[in-house]
Structure formats: C-alpha cells, structure tokens
Amino acid sequence: MNIWGPETDFGMSTDDMRDALDLHLARHIGEFQTVFTDEDGWAGNSSEDGVPVDVLVVLPEGERKFAYVSSLGCSFVPLSSAHYREHNIVRRVEFVLAAQQNGNEEEDISALNLAANTVRQFAKIVHLSGVAVEEGETVTFSETPRPVFDDAGFAGFGFVKPQLPNPGFGHMHLVDAEVNSDIHFIAPIPLFKNEMELAAEIGPEAFCAALLKAGVTEMIDLKRQSIAGPPAETVEVKTISRGQMLWAKVLSWVGIK
Image 1 (tube, rainbow, N blue to C red):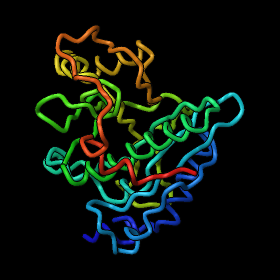
Image 2: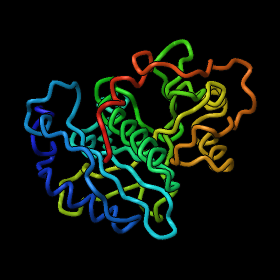
Image 3: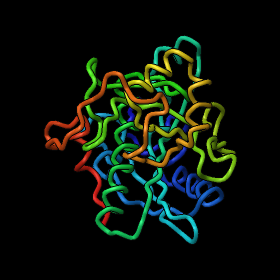
C-alpha cells in the first residue's frame, strides 16, 4: 500500500476526510485552522519517514481559554501493531492535545508549538514503531529515563481519552465511508516515571480513572505534580539544548505565526 497517496486506504479523499473532521470538530469544540500542511508528504515527495500529517488548531473562543490541536493523516491507514493484525482489528486514530492560552504571545505560541509538534510526532511514530494505541497504555522511547520535554521531569507518555470537547468527540463515524473506517481520538499526555510504573501495576483502566480523578486531561501542564506522589527515582530536570532532546527532530516542524 502506498501510504503517501492522496486517499485513505478505504478510498476517501484527503479533502473529504478534512471536511469530515471539520464537521466533527465544529460540533464538539469549534472550527479549526490548518497551521501545518505536509505538502511534500501528500504529493509523495517527502523526505520524512512515516505517513503525511497535517496539524489543525481550534483557537480559543469566548470562555474557552485554550487551543485544541489535532493531527490529520494518521487515520488514513490502520495502525500496524502486531496485536491488531493477530486479532484482525482495524484501529485508526488521530492525536489531540490542548494548549493553555493566557494572552502572553511568546508563551501562547510556545504552548501551541509543543502541542502541535507532539501530536504530529505521534501520528507518524505509531506507524513506524508498531505501537498499539489504547487508553491507559504507556510508551517511552528510552530504557533509561530521559526528559521528553525541556524543563520538565516527564519520562514518557500515556494514551488517554479526550475530556475537554463535548461528549462524543472521542469517536468519529464516517457515514459515507466503508466498514472499518471509524476513527478514534487519543491524547498522548506526558507522564512521570513513577506514573508509568503505577500504570503497569494497576492496569490501564484503573490508571485512566486515577488520572481523571486527579484532574489530568489532554491539557499539557509542564508544572503538574505526579499522581503517584514524589518519585523515588527522578529524571534530572535541567535546561538542555534542542540537539540533546528526545523531541529534537519534531520541534522545528511547526511554527505558528
């Protein structure tokens, strides 16, 4: 299958998929703007690995003081996890995160870029790595804890159900598409090492419930405390150069003006 093609694997065009997502976002949270278009990828000329991915942003409006960020492109082909293949599961996802906006231009742009880069990175890496994307599951990119963001002690990510849009947002059914084309929206939230250990101990469902009880949502909060308490083993938090960061490659992909 040519994952660089302009259509989904079930024959829906890029424009039709964008229209469907436009309607879904408008119904549940607001109208989006496209802040990054993977033109080379959709044209089949990309030098990047992975599927072509655009980034969509719903800007703050009224009493909603945060921006909502979504990938577009990850769901065009099913996830390649061996678990899904073995059980004949067709799993399609797009990734979402929220970025708080406080009126400080520099801080607002930084928060938007962080959310946008993260969803785009995940939309690509899940196809390249064969990760199973299920609520409550965790993922890390190093055997030893390393900071995934600058100036924060997070060591990995967990997949959770979006909480901030209106009810029903987490699942999108494409009425005009073929069977096995439903799309699930998942938030990859940053986790501390001891939170990942807690998830392994109590299981995905209980871990998601614990996060929700503690008020942890898809809103990126680099200053939040671990729900598992003070970690016995911490990730050293310091200002590091972008060349050293796990997220270094993706940080330059999106610039919101």
